[in-house]
Length: 295
Image (cartoon, rainbow, N blue to C red; front, side):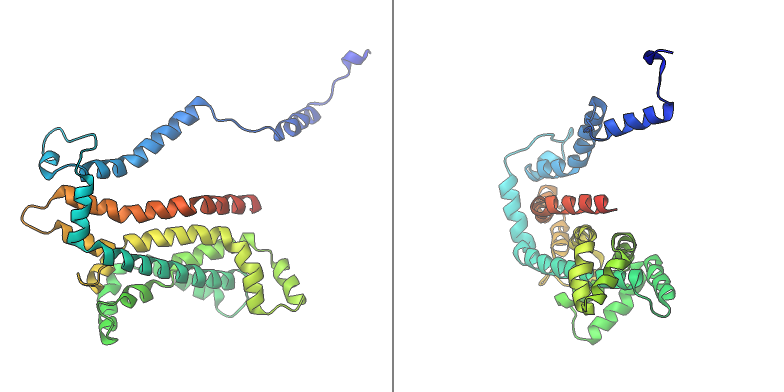
């Protein structure tokens, strides 16, 4: 038997091929790029149409076919929407409300998620089940008793009426609990305890760094939901102290609503979300990838 007749078993050959190919960088093909471009166009279409409609007149929007390109009235309509809806006060109120709700939800949900994931206490499973069960209750059922409660406290038409009921999230608690179960090793907590770390130091130096990717994702989702919330703010606040969504509701009033001004107001209400994602999107995506690598 010659040396050319000696062959390796199929198992080692396949394993060697896998090892040799493990370090290669994956490249996307034309089909992948085509699908991504189509997905991006479909996702951007509503935003682009809003900008197009905001740059036209109400008469042009009523014509057929509708305009498909930008006009010259964008800044005029933006100024009209800003003045009619009082967007200055509304923007400031929405920033305060959304930022406070986001900070409170991320903080309390992380602490509660850590407790459910790693701490042992009585009735923990029952409490977690009750927390998850509250997600199945329609929020509309709590509107009337919540409004009566806030009225008794004298908080009607104040921002704390919108902030306090949403500082804790059942979804956020469950989300952080599920993440910390896998991402936070129990041995790491025990090692910190053995080194003499207090509960506060364990949370600050162990739990928060491990939960940072999930906290970034939860913070982004919470901020968007708080910014776009309409049902409870329209009930709890008035037109003198509105959030952005309540202020935009004032643009639709009138015998003949001006659709171009309404679209301009919607564009103004969307711009802060776009700016926030442009500023913090890289950190959020990096946090997601970091969590994926750890997992």
